[in-house]
Image 1 (cartoon, rainbow, N blue to C red):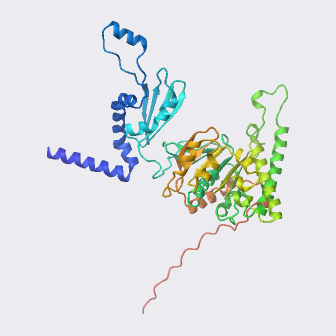
Image 2 (image 1 turned 135 degrees about the vertical axis):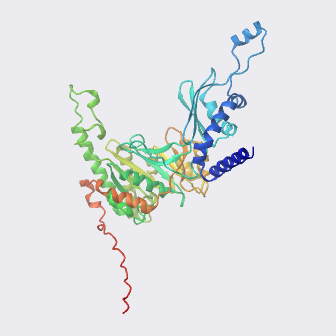
Image 3 (image 1 turned 120 degrees about the vertical axis):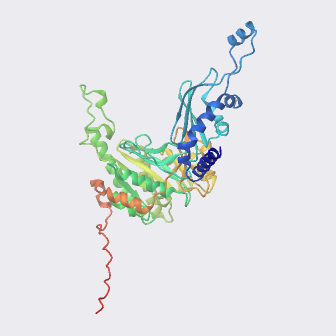
Length: 452
C-alpha cells in the first residue's frame, strides 16, 4: 500500500510539473485522456446547461402518454466524432431540428468553462454539422511552430500559430494584399521578419520599401530584388513596378489563346495559367512604414506623396493578375494620412492588427469588417509581444502569435537563399548593392615562450 501511494504521489507530482513547465508534454501524456473522459461524461449535462438541447418531439410525447411513461428528456446534439490533436480536441456534432450554428458560437465561452479547456471555437462544416475545436492549453504562451509534412505551397507561407492550435498561413493566392498595423514593440516587425524569411525559400521576387533608412529590411537585402530606403527612391521604384505590371499584362494578352479550338481551362487572365517558361516571377512588395510615404511638409513633398499613393492604389487594384502582391505595414492607417489612403485600405483584403495604443487604430483595421475583432485587439496585453488579431473581408477573425525570430536567424535564412533572388529588368536600377560575404578570420593563437 505504501509503494502504491508513493507511486501515485510521484505521478501526480510529475503531472503538475509538466503542466506548469511543459504544458504541451502534459497534454500529450495526461491531458488528452482526462479531457476525453471529462467531455464524454459531462456532455449531456453541459449541453443542457448551455441551452443547446431541444425538447422532445410531439410523437415522442404522444407515445409516452399512451404508454404511461415519464416525459422524455430534452435531447442533446449527437456526437459524430471526437478526435484528439496535439493541442486539444476536435468534437464534431450533428445538430437537432431547430438548432443553429450561431447557438454554439454564442455558447463557446460557457463550453470552455464547462469542459475545463483553454479555448473553444465553433464553425459550421456543412448544413447540420458543427465542429467544436477545443484547445487544451495556452498555445500562444510559448509558440512552437510544428514541422510541416509538406511544403506550404507556391505562395503560401506559415507565419504564426493560431489560438486553436492550427498554423496561420499567409496565402497570397487567396488574399493578395494585406495590411499589418501595430504599435511600437508590439511584434509587428517580427511578424514581417517571419514573413520575409518564409518567402525567401520560395520562387518569388521580394521588393522592399523601408523609409527608416533601411534598418529593418537592409540586413535582409541579399534576398531582395529591389530596395528603397527613402521616399524619393520609393516613388521611382513604385513607378517602375507600375510599368512592369503593364508589360506583364501585355504578355498575358499575347498568350490568352482565345481561338475556338482551345479548351476553356487553358484560357488565362493572370500569370498562373501561363506556361512555366513564360510565367513572370511573382513579386511581393513589403512596405515597412506606410506613414513615411504619406506625410509631407512642403509642396514638392505633397506632389511626391500623391505620386506614391496613386502608384500604390494602382498596384492594389490591378496587381493581382500580374502577380504583384502588397504587404503594407504601419502603426496607423487612417484618413488623416490624406486622400487616397481610404481607397488603398479598401483594396487590402487581409488585416492583421498587433497591440495598438488606442481603439481608433483598431477601428482603422477592423471597424468596417468585424466589431468583435476591434474589442479583441485592444485587449492584447503588453507582455505578449507578437500576439495579433488576423481578419479578412469575410468578417472571420482569430488570435495569432508569431514565434520570436532573431534578426541574425532571419539574415542567415535570406543569405542561404540568396541564389533564388531573381533579376527583373525593370527593377535593375534598384537592386541593393552589397559587399561580398567574407568569413571572419580565425582568432590568432598565442604560443607560450620557450624557456631555456
